[in-house]
Amino acid sequence: MDKFKGLALGIGSLPHKDAKEAVDLVLKSLPQTPFWPQLPCRDKREGMVAQFSENLPCLRFSAEGVKFDPVHKDKELEDFYAKIIDGDTEYFKISAPYASGLYEFYCRLEKGIAGFDFIKCQVTGPFTFAASLNDEEGKPLMHNKVFMEVIIKGLAAKALWQIKLFRKFGKKVILFFDEPYLSAFGSAYTSLNREDVIRGFSEFISGFKSEDCLVGAHCCGNTDWSIFTDTPGLDIINFDAFDFQDKFVLYAPALKGFFERGGAVCWGIVPTEGFSEKITPELLVNKVKSGIDILEKKGISRQLLLERLLVSPSCGLGSLDIGKAAKIFKLLTETSALLQKIT
Image (cartoon, rainbow, N blue to C red; front, top):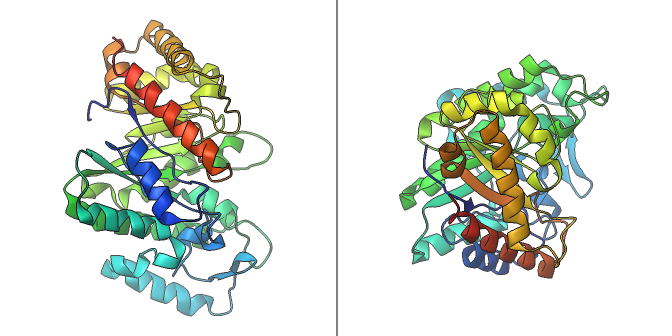
């Protein structure tokens, strides 16, 4: 595992409608770890489900969003699995109308950007994706075994396409999958069980892990964090450290094993919806340090906690205004700079 020592990451979405302006902000704010920005305010096709729905069987995009259409289900499933078996990564690409930020970002890297160490990409996680769509009986696709399998394989293929696309720049790719739905895990709102989630994650990650990338998972609410610590192949866990740090540190025993296996934690320490200009980098650094102190007392090596430390906003910024997004990134970079000095 790389020694991150407080490096800053972005989550994914930004509020911009102009892809060039969004990429400008990313490259200015995160020169070591840039990412391609998702721009849901620019076009509905850049929403977190629509953006990754192209060429997945029976999914149709319209002005109303993505809908499930089973009319040609058998034929579409047959074609889909033929592409999976053939390893046709290009078939699963994200096209320019669905990801303007991705293509602008790629073009900027091609023109020559110096000083970056990682490239961050992202995809919606399979459970959040599948929970957002219903089958012909009105049930979430998450509970449809056939299409849950399709979604796992299809999203993994879209992750693999991104990794191969950006590999030409010779930098380590960090591929995040975003699972906000799992903030409901363990509640009355979901019937998922722990074994099914870990099995699904394991299969999903296995679809692209062999490409020498780092794999991260983002969940912006509280959850059973052991489902992430116990998922084989997962390298980075990203949580909302501003609001849920006290809950996260309760999983110290599971986190200890995760760190010892080479894992890292990205502390989502800069609040998004709760952002205030009164919040200082020093306040956020002290909050992270308090969490590190607790985990150290619970048996996790302080050296590992500091070496495998990243920071990020607590969630994506797509629903905010552009001015606030810029201020959040400024606070993030200042906090990151201070954290890289602590021992």
